[in-house]
Length: 280
Image 1: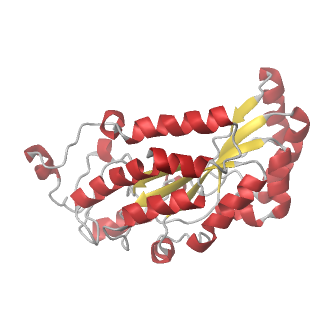
Image 2 (image 1 turned 90 degrees about the vertical axis):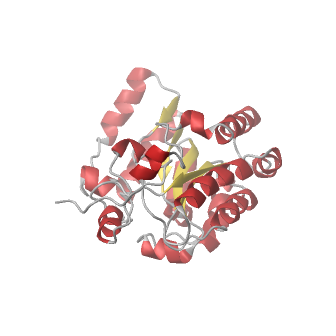
């Protein structure tokens, strides 16, 4: 397990992995007669030996599956080949940022922006589509980061880019750092959803962070951007087109999908934006 500064997994579940025996996974699949699967493990390749065993056991089942992994998969020929053979058709990966400085500060050094394009190519060569996730609001982000990142996603041919506002979930290293720096703006946990700015960014305003994230969504899912990205996608045409059109609708109606109605600029919101007192 990695030690990303803003990752909630070690804080919420600890560092010891919970692994279901491969034989039981296979038995469940056979019992359900499943043909398409989603593995919700937040990093299916964290334990390479387990991943190799699981993928090998999936091969004879002739299923299609989707899951989550890190960019390190693209550097492991054996594991990547076996993932393809086992039926992997799509993965979500946290690319996080196109800034090396942000990645170093976030303790995610194994991510390298200059290699992201090759990650996409390697996955596509193996018939695997990528949902690439980026976060905004890290300390080295400036107001031009939003469109730079969205355009990067388009040029790299990422099948489904996703954008979020980095969220300092309680007790994560990021939360503790921002709290010590007096940068937390609210402890209304309903707002800790990856869609709202709950802290004061280092190099932009809260309003710029909120608006910029929405602008990135709109750019990445413009008709032109979709057309550029889906040309190289390994997904079947109905899937690649349908998913992108679905995300285009989402990108242009973000407020309808937010978990709560928190509009920057209202008097009530301005009161919520006052720095919170340090925890006792």
